[in-house]
Length: 633
Image (cartoon, rainbow, N blue to C red; front, side):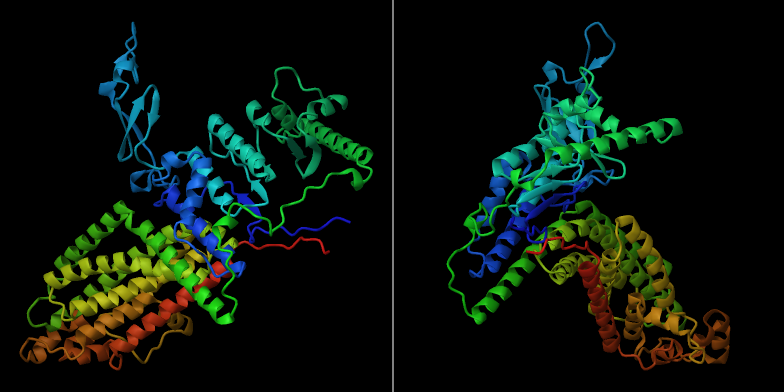
C-alpha cells in the first residue's frame, strides 16, 4: 500500500553526525568544506551521466554558502587544530595565558580584577597567537577551533550531501551548556529550513534544549520504550499514569530519572526495574488503544531523488557525452582531478605541520653528526680494513634512524586521518588506492629533504665510499617502504594507540632481523623458515644490504700488505673479516657475494607495493559494514 524507500548513507541520503569530531587538523574549515563539495559535485555529475563537473568555482560557492548558514565565516580561514593533543603548537589548540601586568585590583580589595575597562584591549596569549579582549569578550586571532565551532563544522560536512534524514549521535558531547544549546538549536533550525527530519540522542538536556524538541523517544535500559510522541503532551501523559513532573523541574531530567536504575543498591534497583516495566507496558497499551489502523497515520515521504536540490544546480545538465569513449575519458579525468585534490590536501597537512618538520630536520642533522663522531675509523681517505665493521654499523644506523622516524610519523598521522577517510569512503567520494597513492607522493618531498640533510652531513663528515646520490636514492625508497608499512598497520588497526602498540614491536623485529652481523654470516646454518620470511618482509634488511653492496663492491683497502701478524692481531675484534683483502671478500663473508644493488632495490620497491596493497585491502574491507534493511517492494 505504501511505497518503500531505501535510504543509504553511501548514497548521501543519510547524514550521520558522529559523537566525536574528526578532521584534518592542518586544514581550515573553508578548505575542508570546499574539498568535500568538490568531490560530491563531481560524483553526482558522473552518476547523472552528464559529463562530469562543469566549473571550477561552483564548489567554492557551495562551501561559502554553507559556512555562512552555520555562522563559520569568521573562522573559515583558521586552522582546525587537533584537540586530542595537549600542546597546541601548530596543531591549533589554544592555551590561554593572562598577562598579569595588565590586571588591576578590585576596589577595596587586594585581589586583582582581570580585563578592567582601562585595559579592555590587553593581550591574552593563546598558543602561538595573541587574542584581544574587547568589551569583556575574548576573540582569537589564531589557534584551533573551539568545541562549538568544531561541532558546527561537523554539521557542515554532513550537509554537503543534501541528506534526506539527519542523525546525530550525542551532538552535545564535550560541550558546555551554552555551546550545547547552540548546536541543538542549529540542528533544529536546519531541520525546519531544509525540511530534513533530524534525530538526535541526548543525555540530560537542559530546559532550553528540551523546549527545542518536537517529539522524543524515552528509552530505558534494555531498549524498552517508555514513551514516543510529541514533547508537549509528554508531561500530561505521565501525569495520567501516576508520575507527575514536580513544579520548577526540567521535564527531561525527570523523565530520565524515571527510567534510570540504581545499580549500587539492590533494593532500589529492583524498585527501579519494576517501575520501568510498568512504564513500558503502559506505553504499549496506549499504542494499542490509540493506533488502530495505519490508515490514519501520516507517513513521512522523502524527497524524490530526481527533484531539484540546492546541490544539483551546480551540476551541468548538458547531456552530450553519451558514447562509451567519452564517458571513459570523463572517468579518467575525474580520477585525475580527485587524485590532485587528495594530493593537495595531503601536502597541506604535511607541510603546515611546522613543529614536527623542524624537529625531524633537527634530529636528522644531529644524528648524522653523532654517527660520524662515533665511527671515527670511517675516514675520508683510503678505506682501511679495521673500518669494515664501523662502515657496516654506520650504514645500519642511518637506515634504522630514517626508517623509524618515517614509520612513527605515519602511524600517528594515518591513524588520526583514518576516521575522516572512512567517512569519505562511505560516501564513495574516491577509491582507497587513490588516497594511499596521494599520501605516498605527498610524503616524498619532505622525506627526501630529511634524507638529503642526513646523507649530506654523513658524506661530509665521514669517508663513506658510496655516492650521495646512491645514499639518497636508497634511503628515500626505504622511507617510502616504511611509510607504506605504516599505512598497512594503520589500516588494519582501530586507533592511534593500537597502531603504535602494534607498529613498534613489528619495527623492532624487522630491525633485529634486518641488521647485518659485521663479524660475518655462516651460510651453512640457514635460519628457520619463519625467520627467513620475516627477513624478507623487513624494509630495513633490503636497505642495509643495498647500501653495504654499494659501499664494498670492488673496494680496495688503503693499507699495504699487513702480513700474518697484522691479520691475527685483529682477529679477536673482527673475526673472519680480519683476513679479507678487498671489498668483494667482505661481501662474501657477509653473505652478499652474489648480491646486486639493482636487484636489492627492486626487492625494496616490490615490498613497498605489497604494503600499499595491504593498506588498500585494510581500507576496503576493514571499514564499517552496511546492512540492507530495505523492505522488498
